Length: 152
Image (tube, rainbow, N blue to C red):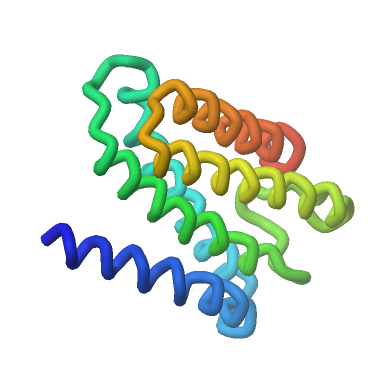
């Protein structure tokens, strides 16, 4: 079972970026792009949230489980951006996503860079480093949401 999940994660990491690049060409309607990006971001939130009890000290640290979630996050972190192409305005995205494309891209890059750091911390098996990297990922999510997501 562990081999299967490792192979699945490896396949996702390899194919995910390729799928993300070609995904924008697959949207027949703008609302399809909105659903795509919202789904990808919901999955990111789910896998990120699964680690929160460990980071907060509310659940035991299981390095293998954390690494599995981080591996999925690495793949997912490349996916939502294809759903933010020209003409895909709507959903929870503010117009600034398109009017400040450079700023949005910078926030996206910060998030992906922080995911790489989270992955390194998970690989190291150091809970203190994991906590710091987890906080950085959360801060990059918040920074983007504060600037580019409609208030709920």
